[in-house]
Amino acid sequence: MCVEGLNKELRKIHNAFPDFNFVWEHIEERSNGEVVVHKMVPSGHHAGAPCALGPCEPIEATGKFVKSDPIALVHSE
Image (cartoon, rainbow, N blue to C red):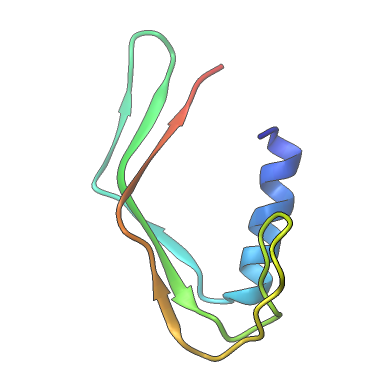
């Protein structure tokens, strides 16, 4: 996904989850230029706009707290 596409999806998430945040264990910068965010856990309350990522149908806000399993995020140039 390009930066513009990621920005668009993150704006949708922020509009749906006003208190959305990321917590992570640590960030590693590798010698090949990659940056890895280890054990990142996104979470927040679905208290804003209906939410839909990509082609999925929007889900109306319920106020429920949503928390993902830990994921790794890798960025390379």
